[in-house]
Length: 356
Ligand SMILES: [Zn+2]
Image (cartoon, rainbow, N blue to C red; front, side, top):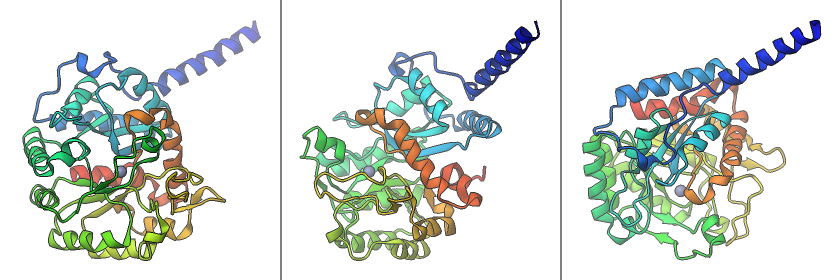
């Protein structure tokens, strides 16, 4: 009898723990986002923020360090229900959901995502990806301005300026996506100017290369109020094209340009970029699988300028857990006092100008 009572108590505790563990926020009722009507615009950020704050608080209350992913391209085909469980299992509080226009000019995917699951996604403008951005950059920049302003997005997507083929594209034999689009082109000016005027941040993909740094700095100096997130800190795919970029250079940029931010996405420490056969993740110490000290110090000195990111796209969703693991390894490399800032508070501050 005593044994049975003990067992009942044990399973009771186990059950109530697992019930609580899944209870950060409701699981969406639709698995396909396009099965629901897209969210009304302008987005009701007051209600959404209320949900998101509750979700973050629920994670914190259960000892989970919530992560906000500032940069992912997800499509309308995402399985909303199973991915909600995966996010909860990994302690990913929010993902900045950026749609993929795929030749349609604009996708409205973020409107569907937010309507289907108003707890897990921050509506983010479509990214500057091929074919739309490449085919007619000025037109896409104009569409961006209209949609962001009218629909009330708190964040723009990632615009590809210099972009070497990504490892998953090389794997799929898609070598054509070798983008080379000047940051100081008319469309680049349009984005910087719009961000400076509206205060809405935008994200750039610009490979790290000596030759690309002066035009970027020229733009940052010309538009000091533009809020720019330079994606993928220290991801360097060709070492021989670089003699300048490193923690000292990034420190100099941070001091000089008050509205420059960095996302922290990186592949794992032992990841090799197929085309150059080099390790692109320059901030990793490959022996400890933590940040090198000089990078950890830089981030710890300016934690409000750095944000966790998963860089998801529909082709690599199987790597979700690994990607979260890499960002948690980054956080674990930092002094405890700044981890919460980098994990989610810096992003919240940048998007909503509020301290969580
Ligand atoms: Zn990128």
